[in-house]
Image 1 (cartoon, rainbow, N blue to C red):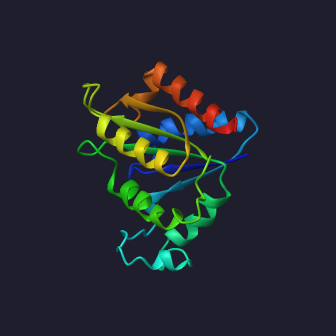
Image 2: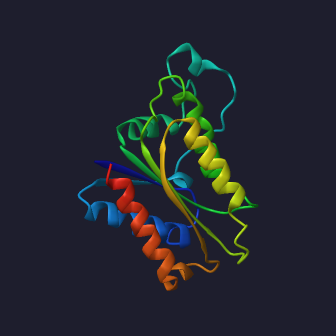
Length: 180
């Protein structure tokens, strides 16, 4: 079992990163091999709607997404972590996910296990609903298996570790992704 952790926040060591670490550590505890990528460190351009991927050669853009496609193909499960920015995912996460358009024709994502972990400062439980709804619909369109999601209230860097319920849920989701 191979699990790919995707960190969508520019803040290393922040709340989304800590949730992702908890999930990946739990996946490794289940015997999975885990890799982690920081999207902010990569040059991923937005989808340019050229339809080049429909010619059968995958995405035609020459950027760091080309390094991630093999990791996505190889992964049995994905754990995506992002903060909530204006009721949606971070720009890095959105660009990454938009480039999955090149993966649709081959049905590559079918049955891959996936979860989303997000942190937000606002204590309104509705804050993450658009982000989680968008990703849930996208993953279901790709015939992925959504094992669950987590939206944790945490604003200040590192604050999420005091939320034992959120950290435990992140670990549970990591185990579920790894149980494929």
